[in-house]
Image (cartoon, rainbow, N blue to C red; front, side, top):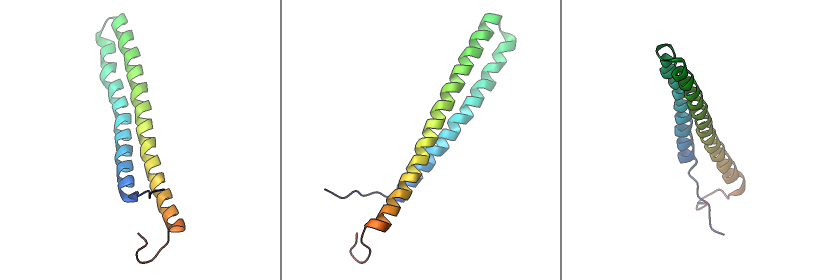
Length: 98
């Protein structure tokens, strides 16, 4: 079986980027609500109702995707920790170990 090589620092960096993107998507959900809430007062009731339903759907989707991406980032950080722990415990140390 071949070696598995992982750069924990790179994995953590990618995880941090994913967590940041998840936070941005959660922020987008709030912006969608704010942008579409203005439609309610200036539109006929049917349009206002449709805009509210659309807005709620967009918010739900943005929150779900944001949460998923943020979780992916968190999991990448955890994986980096596990790789480091396994390397420290199971891999021989010393000159030429890698």
